[in-house]
Length: 216
Length: 115
Image (cartoon, rainbow over all chains, first blue to last red; front, side, top):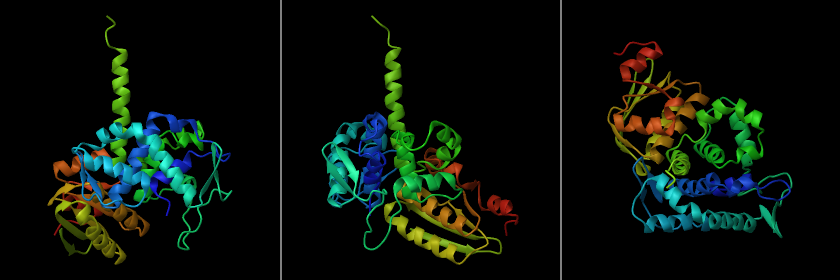
């Protein structure tokens, strides 16, 4: 099974193996941390509410990127999702590298010099335990073009992809505008994903306020 | 977590009590999915005695709502306490879920007066 941080990273890999420039932005860095927090929540290592992330267990889940975030959250005082996301965003590069390493180890990507190429040229995941998992980009498109409610995994993936600036990699500006209501309504309907949105907004507001600081 | 179920003509009403956190989420999800599998006329989740919902607990509502929609079963949440309502508002659930003040209002919306 390809997990959330891996799928988020895969969405940034272009067909020619280059990484989308949006992966270098604040939004993506924060989304990467958020993806790990959601994985930890799903695995019962943390739970979250409006006030804080609560550590339930420090037992590693067995994925290097996710466990890195677990170790840091477990070592610190309790604080809201948005604060954790902002605090850990600087290590997102390490998180992404660990996720890429995991994908390469499992034969989904192969690293060739500075590019990460899909092993299966048609952007498919290899069968895992005989089960096929539909690729993230296809699932996002399917979610956006239907009227169904998405799975919790897909709603978080869509929300994090939106905050991370990843949707622009495979949807045109016009398509995003046309689907804006759908994206807004079902993307990120999740407390942790909303925490990531808040973190980015808080950072942007802080920067904007600094523009208005008096020049002495 | 304790959950009671009341099956009436027009809806099955689930009443979870206490805290819906990671520890309680799987159990409530299973119970709601079992009710949905029985194809009730509608499913109302009366949250009047639900004191707390975490991120894990919130996903139970999405899973249940999704399953209900797939089965064409109306799904309504009602009686949200202020703190739970805030969680639903912040997370965006109020955009995708039918929410009413209480079971009577939910049943009235479904077209049936409360017993």
